[in-house]
Image (cartoon, rainbow, N blue to C red; front, side):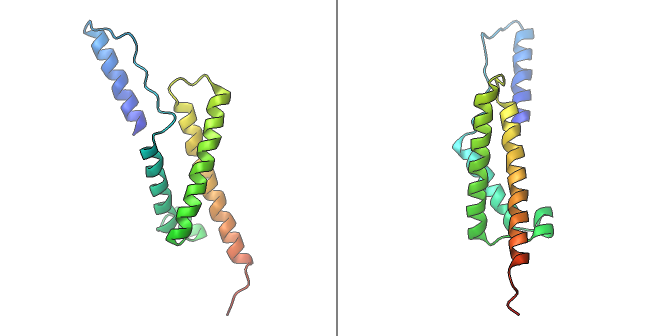
Length: 128
């Protein structure tokens, strides 16, 4: 979705420049994400952790309250890691590379969390 907006803005700039209307500068930054975007990410993480997905088929799903806590931790850790990468990298003007780091961190942490929970469940004694 963000890539589509960036491409649309770039196309609009090219169209206006070709038509003889030049703009001094248009800066489109996608990092850091808005609070609304972060909340949407959280909502999607909870949905993925609680409903049937590739992840839940392999590792099991989580109850809603636990999923919300896990999703919050995943998003916060991923945001912090990506923010640190943006400070270290510095060359990414529009934030695309940092957004990519954020996405990768979320995916990695989701899988790690699911694996850890499945391992803990398997190690727990059965009450049968």
